Amino acid sequence: KAGVTQTPRYLIKTRGQQVTLSCSPISGHRSVSWYQQTPGQGLQFLFEYFSETQRNKGNFPGRFSGRQFSNSRSEMNVSTLELGDSALYLCASSGIPATEAFFGQGTRLTVV
Amino acid sequence: AQRVTQPEKLLSVFKGAPVELKCNYSYSGSPELFWYVQYSRQRLQLLLRHISRESIKGFTADLNKGETSFHLKKPFAQEEDSAMYYCALSGNAGGTSYGKLTFGQGTILTVHP
Image 1 (tube, rainbow over the protein chains, first blue to last red):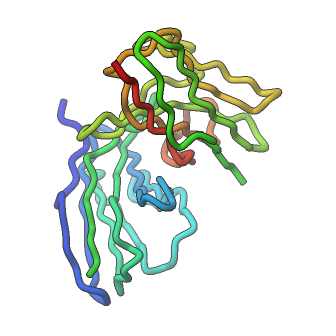
Image 2 (cartoon, chains in turn red, purple):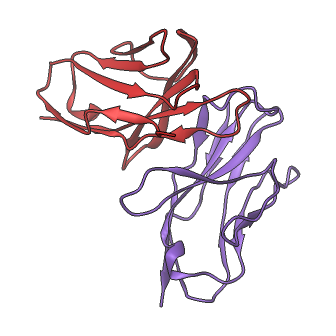
Image 3 (cartoon, each protein chain N blue to C red):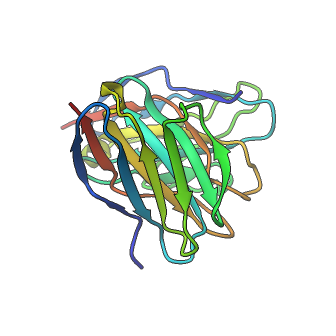
């Protein structure tokens, strides 16, 4: 079956703009999580959605938000972009019963 | 608060040598521990989880609750083992959710021929 798909793969945005990233989980998976990966901070948890509800949230400012749709697809939005938001954003999905988190290829966001 | 520490950012060994990637954690409850691996130009993928107690690609990891460690070991390293390895913790032992993982900083393993 198809893996976790993230679009777009690459993005270049200007400081102050906003951006929306998309994640399609593995079919049947209802949990979708988002992570930010940077060389300095490593992999940091942003938030998790399950059945359209945010179930967990990491320590990121309110500029980072997300949502999940009824088909379990998820989007994350970053408003008022800062240079420090440049990172690889990873999405992961897991099913029920959960055995592991399956990761997408990521979206590389560059803020200039 | 939960925390995962991987003390080695880089680890180099020769083919056929034993390898051990260290992982220590702090968590007040009963965690579930994982090792994820990222090969060059591939996505992050699960290598093994402590609950399954399996050996995957010759790698094993034992959860030591007394030392709060989950070190990854392989007796004879292969060149194809070269990758980035992440230790991760889920605060939901029992498998109800793997939606929130706390990762260590990762260790880049290089196996020389």
